[in-house]
Amino acid sequence: RKNRGNKTQIEVADKLNISYQQYQNLENPKKQIQP
Image 1 (spheres, helix red, strand yellow):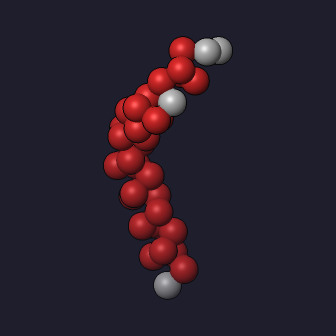
Image 2: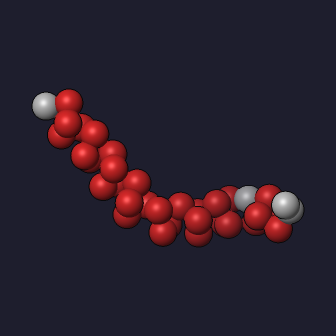
Image 3: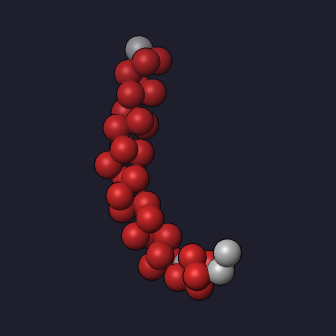
């Protein structure tokens, strides 16, 4: 059962992986420009 919860988080992260970068860009566009 614990594995199931872990798999969900991994799957969500995998799908969010693409949106994550875009999300950060929209939330903190200045931070992305800075090194």
